[in-house]
Length: 335
Ligand code: 13P
Image 1 (cartoon, rainbow, N blue to C red):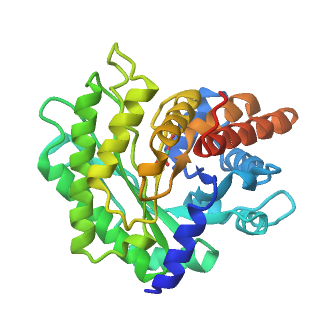
Image 2: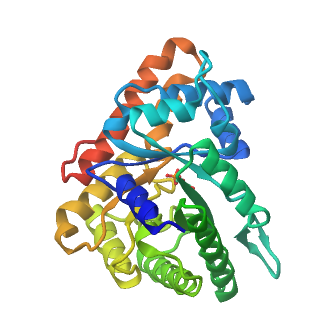
């Protein structure tokens, strides 16, 4: 484990006013998004779409690193240039999703545990050789009646910590993502309680594994009421609950915190990030940024629709959403 390299990579990912772009949708997730937008669900269309993203002019002004999916890390542009090479040349650090999705938890079928630890060390080694310098593992926590169970939180946190340790042994910065889902009608207070407990459980396991915190990035959900709750959380409430939760649960040593968007609209995700920065910036012991997928990509995907003639307009929208998120981090807001 090269702690100097890990810290350098983590600091570069969190630097300035930039953030991360998650473009690591698994095959089923990417195909689901394509189907909804009327785009053929083939490898070639996925390649064309990821090409559109990585060749967007000026993207690196707002994006420090992008998370790829296994299929994507091997893909190239129409001219045969590897996406990884395009990213490195633009100054965007390549990352890779390494979990293998979720499955029902034995004994608690309404909860999920994440797969992918088997053979992970070999895969990490291979990805490093292909140019990836950081990785992502997503655990999913469900709020419901009597959920989450303690067993589920412990199992997901343990897997995240083992993954993080393996990444660092291969000099790759782990992004640890314990996503408390927005699904449900729960209150913002309930989300706060579950998110805080989830993150505290995660850091207990990270300490047990001896994970080097200055070489680690936390990717949490923002604290909000559930999607089916008739009261929509306001930006000042989301900012207050989220920041108080993180200050209570996240050690000062971590390299940074980068939020997922979790199904919030792009405007809401941007606005909430802005609110946290303008109100709480001075109190934060770690840099705070974004690592959005849908909140950056969805409007661009809706414009593209799989048609070459829409490519430039889609790239303009992608760059625009990324630049709004970067502006929010800098304390400026514009929807
Ligand atoms: P969303 O921003 O769409 O929630 O995705 C972030 C992510 O990387 C999920 O793993």
